[in-house]
Length: 118
Image 1: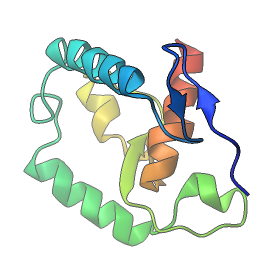
Image 2: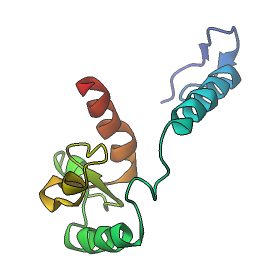
Image 3: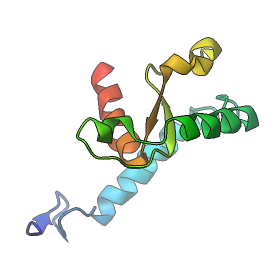
Image 4: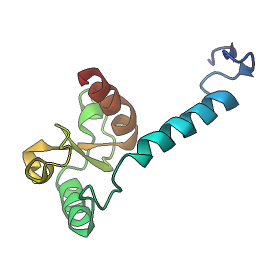
């Protein structure tokens, strides 16, 4: 059962689970500001060597760790760093610091956990 539509702060009526045009614009602007100060993926270490190590790790650990906590076995598609490496190559390559996650868990649960630590 879907929730009823809501009224955005700009006054528009928005369907449940969707973003208003003003919210999408604000998100794009916020993302652009963040990306302007962030090195690209290659500069952060996500290169061919990483892609190969990632593929090997996902073969050995095929299910999302977060989903498995709830007895749901979702294929993992992301190798996440448990402790954010923040450019530390030793921490980046330390396999004990890796965990398999599905994209939804990585993009929601993990990001929320990291925001709480800041």
